Image (tube, rainbow over all chains, first blue to last red):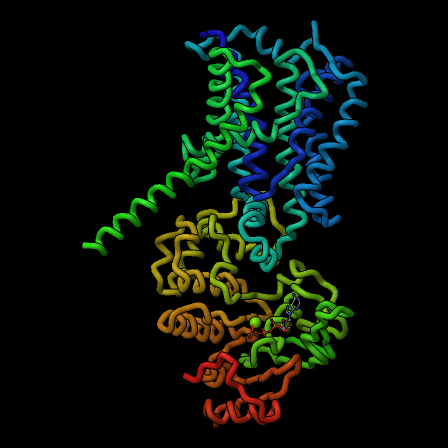
Length: 304
Length: 265
Ligand SMILES: Nc1ncnc2c1ncn2[C@@H]1O[C@H](COP(=O)(O)OP(=O)(O)OP(=O)(O)O)[C@@H](O)[C@H]1O
Ligand SMILES: [Mg+2]
């Protein structure tokens, strides 16, 4: 179990970039972006291809982010300039990316055997771990926190405030001179850059990129966001983005436990769906029960 | 300051739902003019506001603000010159953002958004001074989310946000209609105070006849997409709400006004 927990924490930290990206679109921009599945695999595919081509893993990962941003911007253009429904715009990009990813990889699976990846680079540093937290996980944590802090800062700049207001009240922000087409496109680009970064890291961590590696990533990202918010709160952006990282780790731990308990890896998608459904309905169900019981209490008073 | 020429706006043209919202509107506002606008439901008052702000583009006609032709500019491009407060207290602010963040957005009006922190110590001080003028104690609640404020407080904040960068034109669309009488009066007083202090050119829609007569220096009456009455200060001053209702009935040819939600006092 120790090794499994170890791995779950490492994965949780690398998938946290995905969760931060999903948080950015779903919560900040209030935009249900379906690009994520495609841009996650895009990040993995491009990084793997470039590394095999002799690129430095760090520059390969940065390139994956740039291309992920372009994918997000494309969805943004479809929905703002092309007036295509937001959900559909993301689905269209996601589908197109499947073909593009295959083009990049030239086959369905690209192994990174004996390549220098960012993961082997970190491993070669031999950083001592602390308990279940490996030395590698410590480095991952530092990078995640750095990205989180940059995102927190950005969302408090003038441009960041406009992006948040676009998600909160787009009519209002237009009346103050912000171009909501622009803020939507920028928001989607930044979100998908983080998601592609996550894909690039995961490909290097697991030692291969696969054309199907993005399937279900939106739901996994959402599960992390929702679980994080429920468990750790979301009062401020600083708090919420931290909660999302926590949510990503908790999600991986739950999955590790489920596998331990004898579930098949093929069951994971339904487990994930259940986690999201429970996390989304539980607060409402609880509220409903509370309402009913308070109504009953009132009724009781009337009777008396 | 504002010059509207021959503006026409038709919704759903060519369908069974065709609706001429504005027909041949001409309106000139001098700098510092404070015009109140009254009219029956569906008269086109909100449409006129939206045509000025760029929310809708006219089918015909031109709009000039301060000598600049803005007819073809998008809403966000015109926002540099125009401050707005909406009827719905929810509409003018971002509920999940704090008071100081909302003010920072308003403060950035007319500037290109940069990658600098939206709220800093210097701006915070300005915000506090401005909020203090509202007399709502909001200056001590900079970090409160706007969603937690009452409708009246939000409307006061909206008014401040719309005006403190001194827009060339201020558009108020029934901005007190959703409030209880006491809070509405408070917003009316604030409006007068802010408009006078900044000498803002203002267009205010209201259903309250008393407000329409006592506020501002000119009164417009609209009906079925037209301006049917334009009263200058001298005439407006002598009128009572009764006279105004009579004028309204006359102008629209003796039709009953019962279905309209005019408020006499
Ligand atoms: N977006 C729209 N699409 C179709 N018709 C519209 C639209 N906006 C307004 N109208 C119609 O145009 C006419 C003028 O509406 P407008 O909202 O300007 O009236 P108003 O004077 O503000 O009325 P009220 O006093 O009820 O606010 C109405 O008949 C309305 O139904
Ligand atoms: Mg109206």
